[in-house]
Length: 163
Length: 327
Image (cartoon, rainbow over all chains, first blue to last red; front, top):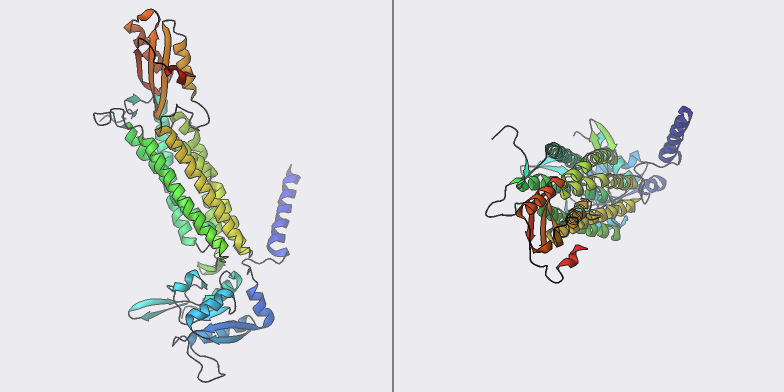
């Protein structure tokens, strides 16, 4: 009896290990493999909608945009071994691109009350700033449902957090 | 005003052992409400974008209705018959039952639409991370943990309540216990949905949400069917609604075996907890002693506590077709 139970236990342990680690399944996993694609291609496509001081237009043609969130995302790209590719545009158009996965992140002074929250994935607030006497919680948008990318970004922001 | 007030259902006094059962049932329903309050709060705290989890959460909210319906219904049913409600308030059980069923069906339909359209639009549910005590963990894990908590407790509560429902002949309590017993499937389904999101199978979440919605709908229709049958004065049935209540046959057999009854027409209806019995009979030889009628009422009463409001009426003849309901 004892040997049977212990064997059963070890079998289920092996199965669980195989399921979680052995087959290389990570939790969470991106359904469309976005994070792996970013790592493999070395390119992180980021939509930038101008919203100073978080994001600002490029000073001239061919130069990167600026702002605190642009700097933040550049540093994040580095941690996953990628170069940011900036796509500057209007918020609504960029959200559409994000939904389709044509860009992978979107910055533009978005807040947690953003109306896009049902369309795209928003990170947890990474910084709180006072605006018009109200505390506003700022977030970054990611491709919806690509949870490995979202989690990786949130982990990075936690490390950067507390500012 | 006495310390231990004897419990009644209308004018029917509950036997000593059943008073005990009723108190226990009340206590268990309060425990259920307390548990649901913690479950709803915890689920709300960890809830992310999982459709299946949202369905499980709404189901827990709806699970509040049957215990409340039982507690309110059992209280109302206790009120003695008066001029305004000469038959007592036993039907309050069926009313609570009907309301619970309607709420379940409404929410079930909404959830079928909600999760179905999310699935059709191929919305990929985002679940990021959570900060717990300085640690950043994938938010799916706390969801699974809370769902596991909501998986275990209702099964135990359901199993404890089921025998009490049978003894008290309370259909709301029975439906509640039955739903609790099946509740583990909801939690398990939501866990599968969340883990599905975790391994990148975004559609698994929507599929599980649809299954949970379907089970809510089924519960709702079951409740409505049972409540409507009661309100339509369907012949008394066992509390699980699978067969005619054995007391119906017992009453008929008793009356069949009285030599001084030539023919009789007997109807038993379930008022909720207690039965109303109406007997119209043709006495053999056209005459009957009042003492015999009195004895019959007493004998029927002695059969079961549920048989209390009993009318036995001698008639000259039974109307054409009246006996058809006997078989």
